[in-house]
Image 1: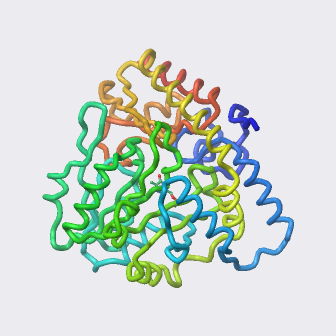
Image 2: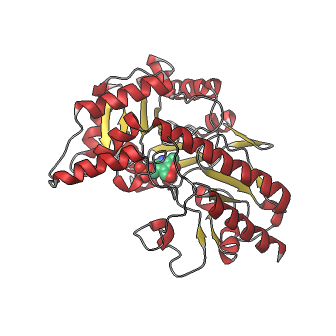
Image 3: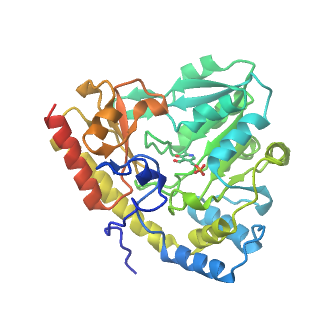
Length: 382
Ligand SMILES: Cc1ncc(COP(=O)(O)O)c(C=O)c1O
């Protein structure tokens, strides 16, 4: 079966947050992380079946869905999980916030490595915790953990480590040895590890995702893994995700912190999740091939036509991290917006001003090509 990622679907007239941001303006929105593609046919079919029932009372994940998650983890990551470890969540930002508040006391600290997805920095603050940001070390185009800086940042009040794996926005897929170092670090400093693996089925390079909790029983015992079909299968509006928490004590602390605050699961999200994980692998493979083409287009176009813009290697996600520092722009996000392309400015991820923009390439190639041409025109006209 072939899948169509080329057709441009009008989203400007819909409820899309991505497109509404620039309503009435000629700006191509390549910011927030959802894709301008229709979901896999199996997901649409499952939603039709569920809608046709016409009743939308309180729901719960049933064994076929739980089994789909268990099978998916075994097939895709070689990770054997127990259905009892699953905690369903309407969103992973919820999971980050719940985790930040569940462990330790107000005033305790959460470590994370920047640049990073903004809620990694805001969730601890929302919960009265301190966010301790340790920059990833950049060696040429490659970002790595800065172990000396991380060790120096730990205090007796550090409780949690927030890991983004694969990493948004720098696009790294961490190697086994690096994840083993993360595990050893958390064990040494007695930290609970929250590993947000939401992008783990969007690995574009020829590697397999390694859930850090799958490395050893010791690290499994202190890890909360956050996963969702929402990025890969393009369904964040259906609000369905889950935490995998092998340690019963951690799980109880986490679910207590959710109690009365986190809402019931959306029944349409549950139906879509099952279809995504069980029946949509051919669509995902086709998507990955398409995204690789988009990624490669940005790499070649920027090298040839975007002076002072360097695309850093993007091994996963559909988010390109572009180093624009050579252009010496005061606010690169605003600059490209004025040129008709809505990107995310790097400062949102904790980068210094004027250094980076993030470009969401989860869109038809024609849209991407037009956006790149607009960026070129904006730079040439400077
Ligand atoms: C690393 C990461 N975690 C979480 C999310 C959002 O999760 P949710 O929509 O389930 O709250 C995103 C969205 O871009 C993300 O990049």
